[in-house]
Amino acid sequence: MPYVNIKVTDEGVTRKQKEALITATTQLLKDVLNKDPATTFVVVEEVPTDSWGVGGELVTDIRARDAARQ
Image (cartoon, rainbow, N blue to C red; front, side, top):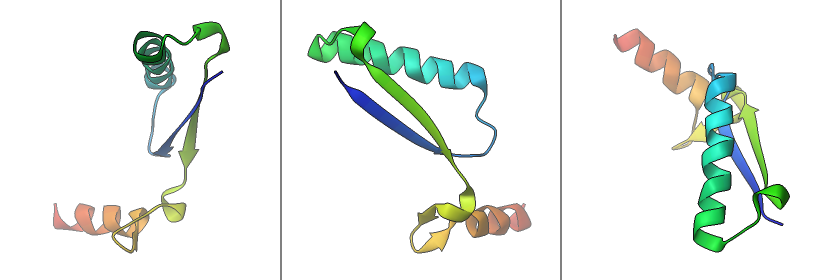
């Protein structure tokens, strides 16, 4: 019974994109590990950019800086 948790920043991931992630991940586990899709759990979790850091910085600050450069 696989459990996969996909975390993404909450920057407009659509329902259709989440569905595609869940479908593709389930199929990957079936193809690679021969896992039953009926018992495969996939969760897509959206995390606020204020709660996600990269290189010691908040993603919110990185996005703001990148936007100012454009």
